[in-house]
Length: 251
Image (cartoon, rainbow, N blue to C red; front, side):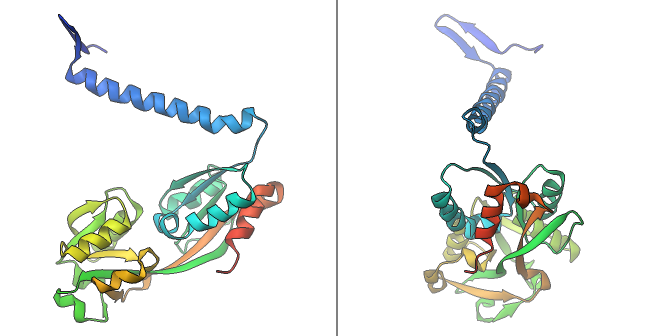
């Protein structure tokens, strides 16, 4: 590597700073190799019922857990790799075969894909009950940009989406705290730490005792979730066709 990784001492060796970095990379490589073996295990056992599923954070956090739980109850031998991706990336991945199925909330179509309605949702603004915003029934996104936000972490689909919407208005998000999930956003807003935007489906009935929920008066606040698959893909894949069939069942 061209740099010392270990320091020899009387009682053994100690990692240098470069050694610590190398160790973390080695651990990730080993973990990826272990995951590769796990992913390939069904094939070595004669099972080819593996589905790669890309979806946005909204669907993964709200709707898919119950739907997939029902699917696995019916088809326990199926293995699914579920990954969170941005909508545009999901469409490209399904079209090029990197994913078997996707769920998106973007309006863009693709000539090689079929799009099927899945779930309807909506972004809402959460604000502390004592906030001056709490008395409004609805609000425009531009009116929120001077307030501190509780947001998902950098790189998450929602954070990227809201940041782009702010840039389109000539502003930016004033992010006070970044967290890993919607429940943390809701709890921090209730504590008075700032405001936040989440899908309505992420909320529970008791949440409105502690926070005010405002409608976002923006066209993009509506979330029309759709399933996307390659045309003809379900005809040659029994388990994929059954998954799509289950996801399309009315709620």
